Image (cartoon, rainbow, N blue to C red):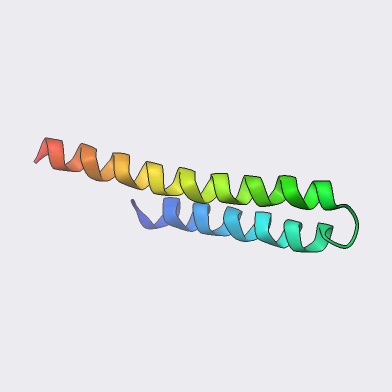
Amino acid sequence: MNKPLGLLFAVTSIIWMTLCAISLNYNGWAAAIFFVLCIANIGLGFTVKARIRRKNQNQA
């Protein structure tokens, strides 16, 4: 995974985590949704990284 794409996943995960922490005081359901989105974003980042690595191995 190139650096800008990794940075994008890192920043968006931090944003979801921050929104989750802020929404804990206001609405538990919103916090749960933001938590699920954060975990999904992290998982998507690992999936993209694995696919890019597999694609590069097949080309070499």
